[in-house]
Length: 415
Ligand SMILES: [Zn+2]
Ligand SMILES: [Zn+2]
Image 1 (cartoon, protein in one colour):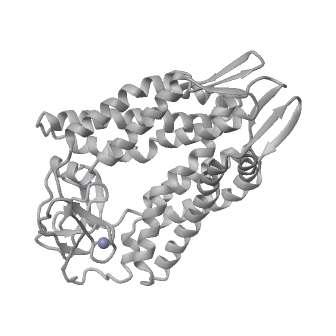
Image 2 (image 1 turned 90 degrees about the vertical axis):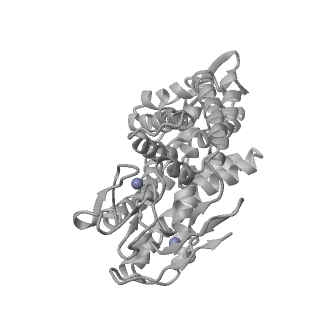
Image 3 (image 1 turned 135 degrees about the vertical axis):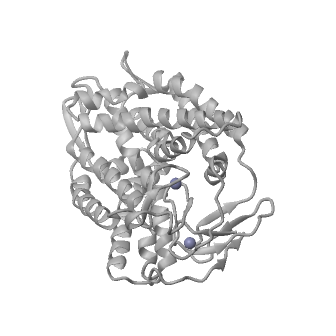
């Protein structure tokens, strides 16, 4: 069977796979297929577990601070209210969406898909529902909130006696269930259950859907090579529409905001009337001084190194597209995949601040206030995440794939 690589667009032969093997693209290394059938029952069990744990994890106290008899509790579902009360309503809405709404939409849609598949049914709306589920996944961040909670615990413990509540322990197991879902979730195999990938008859000019990888043949595509994908029912095209300009605008805006995000304080700690502004870097220094050096290193990588890598990496790829350069294509493709994968982890600091604002709320004695730097930092993370999702890797491969010239069909690599 001939299939198309979703990243570089190369047409290649896909043999039938032996158990525990996978096929990767011969030139860019993208995974094309893996052997085995989707583990629907195991995935359903993990999803039900995550859904059941969602409620105690989000609606019961995660961290409890005891400051000379005065107690404060942090609850994830209402945690963003402290940001709202301090006038940062955009930040509050963002934190609420990423930690409460998106995980619920993702888990409910995945649950519905798996129940339908387990029942052997294939309604017409299964594809669009899979599209919603897949789109929500990067924006549902329970595992990142868990790490933010660890950092908040470490910071709060330096101020007052801090303990982990029932919600905190539930959150730990909830995040573990989410990890199990990710390990069991074979997206390509599930798409095959929705609608099997047909063999391509005309590799020249064909392209794979951005969302579900369904091959669209040239005669199926309408004007400007755009059409509705038969499987996921989303609008798709040979290239993501206007991707270059959108990514360039997003990266430029994020690069400008990266400067105040690192120079301005993200929060101010008020202790006995004394104000101590904290930047991202000074927060890392405090974690290091408190002896929490593994967390300090994680926050350093997530909050400083990753945003910089995203900005420089995407700028380099955009510049190479402008120059129509064919050098380092595989390295650049891997870099964009890495940026898409790790970009969301930069939200750790934003989540930490949202928890600390609730916990350290003792008036002049001990108080954490949000500062404008946090808004700039959150904007950098979100803008670069959108940029990496909008980036179309195939734009880079256009440098060596002048269309519509016929391209040779290669064998995929079996691992
Ligand atoms: Zn490829
Ligand atoms: Zn599709």
